[in-house]
Image 1 (cartoon, protein in one colour):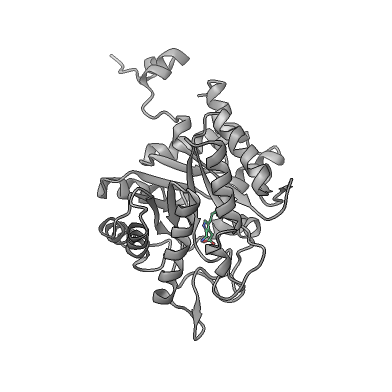
Image 2: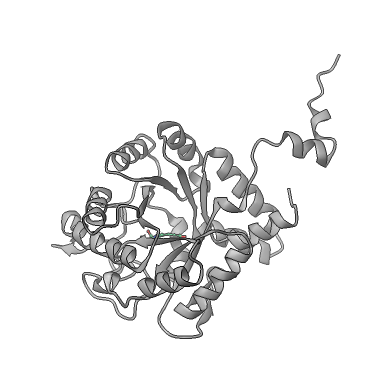
Length: 324
Ligand code: PBG
């Protein structure tokens, strides 16, 4: 007798019935970039299909996402001006603050998340303030807390610190609570590696560091136990959800974080993961949609409850088309 696993693969129907991992539209969080102006929708060259929006057009894009079944967005800002301490990051009339209130005004049920970090707002491009040539952890905490509170005040449902300073989840939680924002969630970029896959994002967000690199605060891609330590600390500091970033080169880390924590786990399918598939698709080397769905399914299979992905709208369309 031969044991025949292939019997379970012979038709689409049986394959669908025994499928272990299913993507759904609620898994996706779509990143959007907002800049000053009106009527802006400028393509980002390193990320085909992604745009810089102004506040008015980002609302249209959020509406299109919502109509396609994507229920959440994360907003990144390109400020009107940058300075040494990123003061525009907590401005009441900052681009992100305006975009948050405009999107929430149009779509009150959408889960609006904001990226909390200084790198888009500092003239040196680092994620914190610089003291004696180094990113100053403790001086940065108060600024991140201020930024997070300004996002909450504008109506953000969730703030997502991506700076990798020590102690920032606690600092942000405390500031939110003391300002009356007990219900604002914190999605911590708990495990953020110093990755080459952020390349296209730094063009999109105009946030490349002007000197040095981010290895002094982001994690070494070779480390696993350090990831679990970061998750443990962020849980203790009051994070509601934890994130692993990037996703595809760190699927093993997603598995371990899921095992180690009781919080929802998010994974960031970053700009480089998007750009690689888009570039290979343009050259005719890969089937873009199938590669995308396989990649997103792998991220979910590894244990991600939520996936931040530039593919959100396209993936929602593929799910509508009942693509496996
Ligand atoms: C900002 C931030 C980065 C990303 C998200 N938030 C870039 C960085 O750390 O340089 C990367 C996202 C992507 O590559 O898609 N701190």
